[in-house]
Length: 175
Image (cartoon, rainbow, N blue to C red):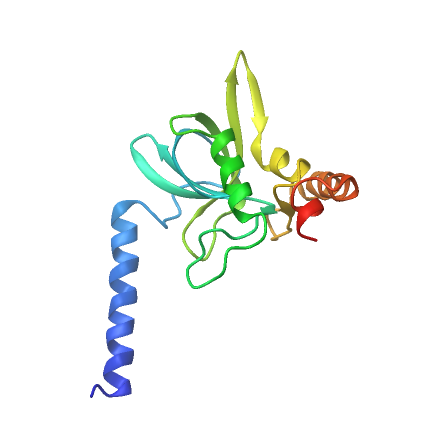
């Protein structure tokens, strides 16, 4: 039987080792500056509001700012109503290899080390789709304010309210 003190020390050592590995891999660090614009490509979709993107050869988990989609892959949690649909729509909007532009939030990272960003899909000829806003406006995501990343909070709230009134997406099926 391991004493609680030894368990605590092992857990602390494991946490420190994980932090060092993340820092060495360029993940969970603070190299992204608030407001910085980063060109990237989509490596894969995690769920409705998180992707893995390739930033010049470095893989980063990117969490969309200002929105929240129903859970579809959260460990030890049930799949939420409309979670798979939100993930599928995110994948439809951003297939692997899609060129994107990330605008880093005022607070660049969340407590899990994910890069926090507004995500824009490049459509060519200078056209872009604001993915965060599109998902909210069509009822695949809810608007959520997480200060200090609030620059589009009013826009997202308006889009959510319109989608809710129209019964779009999750508003027509789950609420």
